[in-house]
Length: 421
Picture 1 (cartoon, rainbow, N blue to C red):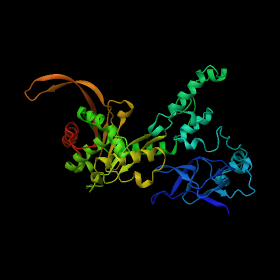
Picture 2: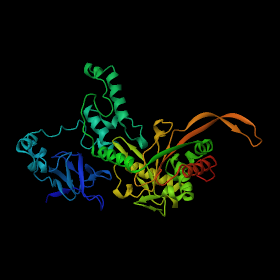
Picture 3: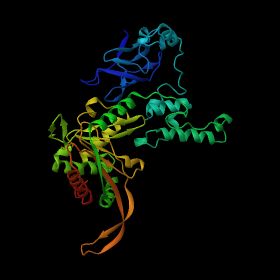
Picture 4: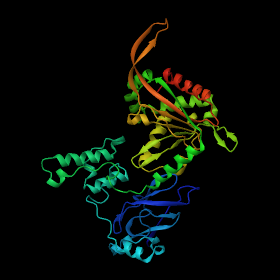
């Protein structure tokens, strides 16, 4: 019996989804729970697994189309006596009936997707994003041969571009390969590329936040030398004991939690003319993806110890990059932390993540000369590890003096770190 593939319900408040990519083409064999297609909703992007094993018999909704949840988007057959459908059937989406006849005819005549240059499913065994896999197919690159420099060996876009450049400069390369320049990341100059569903949502929310909140920023310089030495001393044993890398982020999250507990209005939100003071700190941690930005949330972060914070941060980051987040994972933030410093920025002026009233930006940690005053009042110059922290806050509810006092607590907690890791 054929099995219908439907647009899943990704949360109570989600009623539709956009198919951004089919990971299989009609006629391909699929295994139950194997990633079958990718969707984008107003909450998350996700890979949707196949509901059964068999052969992808038909694609009813093509890439780029948005449909209601529980809509049948494809059919998986048992493969008995089945053969790959004709190009017309494979390419025709379910929505073609609503299109003008000429448009429907043109789409029906479109050729099927080009077959991959690699073994079936091979690319999906390599940790990579849809953008990276698309780039690899365009350049006929076997991702299994690319050395991934991302987290956990993940193959990044730059890894593919470097691999292509290496092939182009190799002596055995064909003249065409030697002369072909690597494409610019994202798009080729001169192209007109439609915004992805995620990018449209990000754009909409950023504009809405600017219109909603009275944005003001303050910046503090923080001496991270003590924490840098502590991390360098314990990072190897920490990973051996707990199976997770020790990063700087839990230090910043913990310092923010301590400050939020002393200044709860920074952890609040506005509801009309009322202020909602939240019982717990739900820390949103911004994660930069190859295809956009997402903010998974550490629920009840104030109840977690340091190890719990590190494990939760790592888990949410990995699931964000592999499109395994659920809508509940990105809901309910009461305060947000973003880290532009990971890309080398000295500091950032982030936009508030609604309905929060504040967001903390973490700059890059760099070594700088600094004047140190001893207990006896003697000044000296020393090399210290410095980070610049910014707080973007909503001036409708938070005054500058309170914002500065909040950041003073963050600064003192980090500079005088006393918790065990």
